[in-house]
Image 1 (tube, helix red, strand yellow):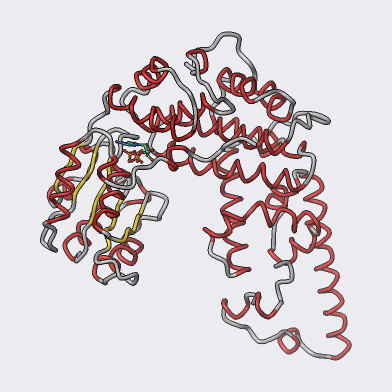
Image 2 (cartoon, helix red, strand yellow):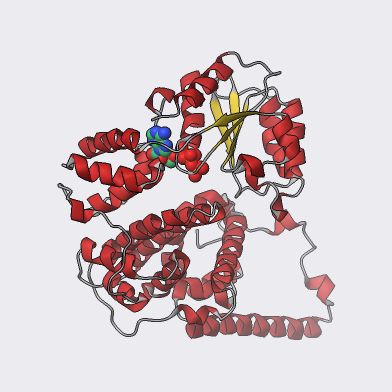
Length: 457
Ligand SMILES: Nc1ncnc2c1ncn2[C@@H]1O[C@H](COP(=O)(O)OP(=O)(O)OP(=O)(O)O)[C@@H](O)[C@H]1O
């Protein structure tokens, strides 16, 4: 079994005392927190990715026993949403008994993006009315809206020195029971370019499946003989060891988005439902990570998210091999393939969430694992109950023609049922309005899981 736990999460500092480097930033944060009053300006922690901004904000909250409300760019930052979430949490106390709630607003420099129009204004309003501490996080201080700079206090985070990164790596190695010579740790620390997250990821990628690390285990990203995406798909499903698989993945030039699509597009080669579900699980976890790093334009991290995803899928595949052809993801259509696929997934999640009265976040976690099995067992029922279209069903069945056929048949059945009803109405002489149930409000129409109407769940 591969260890696919994210080491950066596992070794996220819990207390300000565990934060490596940036001592003056940490001190500034602690002073601010100790003397905080509703008149205090919110902090803006800014600096390169992976140097401890988010970790410091959480560590501070932990040290102060403050509850955390985090908002990030994946929340729709319209003014109303921010007003509702941050506005209320900033003026009401905490339910858990913690003294304060700190609002951590990530990607504050992204507020100019179209979806966030009005976002900066909303935050300035919230800051003005807030009775709780607020911490903003940004990569680029100069990208911050002018009006936000005026009402906040900047805290600069600097890239870490290789000599402060190395001891942290040593600590992680000893916690993981891995032997690693000093010069290897120094080499990783050097190569990380001041980014602790990159260093931890690099160490993790090198350490997978090993108890002792040597210089040759670190992947430099330099490429010799180029492998193709086909080699990579074959390696994921084949019997190669982790190391060989990672080597192929470092050679492939395609972007992680593309790699992800190819792997997802070939999950039909999994030996059974359960392994396919596990494969989906690895992909969707990587997907979130890739999405996050993509929004931050931080491309080097992709490689590690991809590597972990590949190992997860390979583990689920169990060396079963490719039976049949490697399929190219062309079948998703030529234009904006990945965006379309994501749009389908999002729409599907929305529908499932509505029909099952389950929050999307919960569904996303359990999504493919549980639902795939159910949908695959009775696709027609899924189409009827969740109103799936052919594209959505294809996500589960991996066979566009079969999915289209099921959807057509269900539509045919529905039409036949309607015809029958019209005929019987004609017989009894009643109009459609008379036989139709009275129009219910949108909520009342939704099947209630507890009443057993939605039988799939
Ligand atoms: N100064 C640090 N000390 C110890 N660990 C760190 C430090 N900086 C980063 N890390 C490690 O890297 C991970 C990511 O760090 P963090 O999320 O705090 O970075 P960040 O500066 O907020 O980056 P981003 O701008 O991408 O959000 C942490 O979970 C932790 O494992």
